[in-house]
Amino acid sequence: MTDIPFNKAFEPRYGECVSVAPGVRRVVAENPGPFTFYGTGTYILGAGHVAVIDPGPDLPAHIAALDAALEGEVVEAILITHTHRDHVPAARPFQALRGGSAAVPIYGFGPHGGDTALEGGVHVEEGADHGFDPDVRLGDGDIVSGTGWSVEAVHTPGHTSNHLCFSYREAAAPEGALFSGDHVMGWSTSVISPPDGDMAAYLASLETLRDRAEDRYYPTHGAPIESARDFVGRFIAHRLNRETQVLNALADGAATIPEMVRRLYPDLPAALTPAAGRSVLAHLVKLADEGRIASADGAASARARYRLL
Image (cartoon, rainbow, N blue to C red; front, top):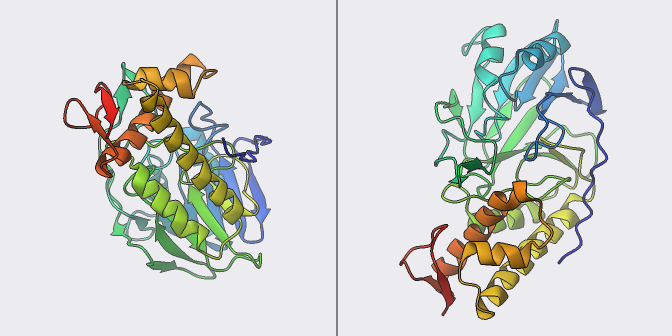
């Protein structure tokens, strides 16, 4: 498999507001887990008049810490990368503390686009906030600006259909800065879980990011990513290698997703097996859509049997 230089050196100081770059601060929520790493990092852009990216889970301590960090400052916008429950539920409570929707609009692509995936009753991601809808819907290339800060929305479907990254247009670094949500993280690959997760869309979105100028990413979980375009290239190669492994497993007689997971992930902890199964399913959906494989059931599903065409 392609070597990806994951960085798991991250020491969160829960509830503290930490400067991570000129004009960029972060407050980490205390919600560690297998899909959140050490917790959700809420970013603050600007000074005095600010934007907040991904307020995080609805944890009173985190909301209070974020509010305290911005005492005396004006929050002009709340920006949402996507609607998983570790990113968005704090948005409305925090907005209410700051004057409501008229004073602090919430920006995002739109509501969640599909059901939370389950396999064997086990969640394979943090789950979706199906009741959330932003005050202002953004499309690819839309600009949101305030006093001394502005971002460009970059639509990056794949992890979810409504995922956005935000390019920070006032970034001090010459290589620029991109808030990458869960689309590209430095500590792990992202879960791609159908039906809302889409492997073909994810790969296309990675290509979009690799072609952009930004070379420093701030994911919602974990440390910043340096040399990000090279990192994205390694992610693309990793996914394409995994696709080849799926095809080879089929050629060797593996017909079901559990059989493929055992071959592709021989040392995987049991708790992560359902997530691996969803990733394999995402590859199978893509390959079926391309006419390279077929399902005995006629459609790709978690329980289907597959064969090469």
